[in-house]
Image 1 (cartoon, rainbow, N blue to C red):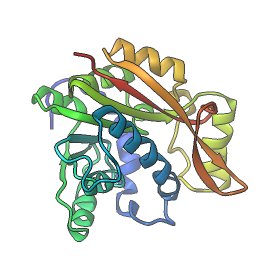
Image 2 (cartoon, rainbow, N blue to C red; image 1 turned 60 degrees about the vertical axis):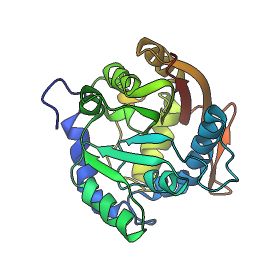
Image 3 (tube, helix red, strand yellow; image 1 turned 180 degrees about the horizontal axis):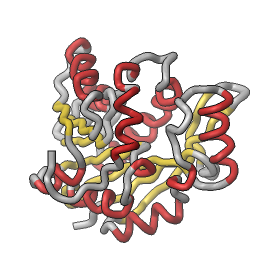
Length: 248
């Protein structure tokens, strides 16, 4: 672990540390992520393929790409990225997540470099990647702008940064906190703090301040009738995702 400044919020880390063993339980506390994961992967794989000129129908289309999943949790994104041929590093500030991810990857026959560390520590060590995945993390750190700057520093020139988070408005309070934590009980109460949610315009501003060039944003929209997620061109009112580049 690093010895310098950190954007870690220890209280936020403790929340996810307590849930570590449940990462791969599709009906457990991470059920919302398992439901959302195919939609996240659809966006991520399309963005990577477009940016690096890869054919997703080919075998190991991401071969030769080095990818970091920061805040990797139990490896829900790391494993499919490894299956697509990428060289994957999964990093998490919650120590308890790492052995869970390591065991599951081994059982799945995948080689993934899991580390108990932070974006800042990796950047200080001079690590660089073609792709940095930063999914549902930025709303849990103490200093989002400093954290995004570390993510920028981890990218190679023309590297791709994909970041998802939750918008801040009355609808997101109703859906992401009241609905998910109190009504559906998908997440433990207190998992999210509404005041830490970030609007798309705020995130784009912070990305630019961190030295990144935002190139896309989409919504992750939940349909309660079909009980499914989809990518939306216009509805960024609750969950949304962005793509940004580190220009040479």
